[in-house]
Length: 124
Image (cartoon, rainbow, N blue to C red; front, side, top):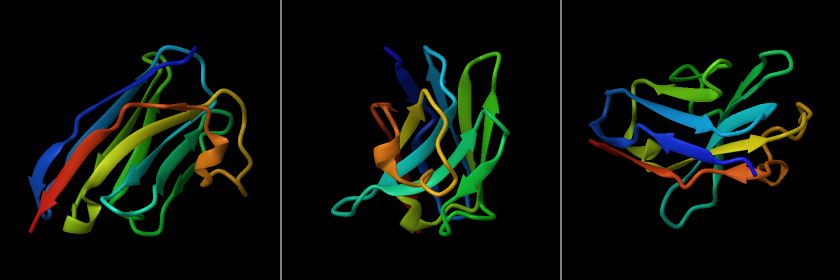
């Protein structure tokens, strides 16, 4: 059973930065981040595939967030810069043991494992 443990959330003012980390206990091929704001559906943020290192971002975070991975530590990171109040949400790490096609990689139903979530709050 794969476990995901997130860290790095917190509170920051608009324009600030935060870095989220997610460590996994098992082998996963695809790891990424989703977020859920109060009374909103879960939203795709970013993902990185082990197979070819390709990365994908949600439109609302492109150019501000960067996903990276450390194979040795079996961890994935989300560097969030120029944060905005609308980025406020609970951020979830997600992983899948197998490959995910580019066409469905933004679909949360494709992910088998989820972290407990970490709160990110951005004040104006």
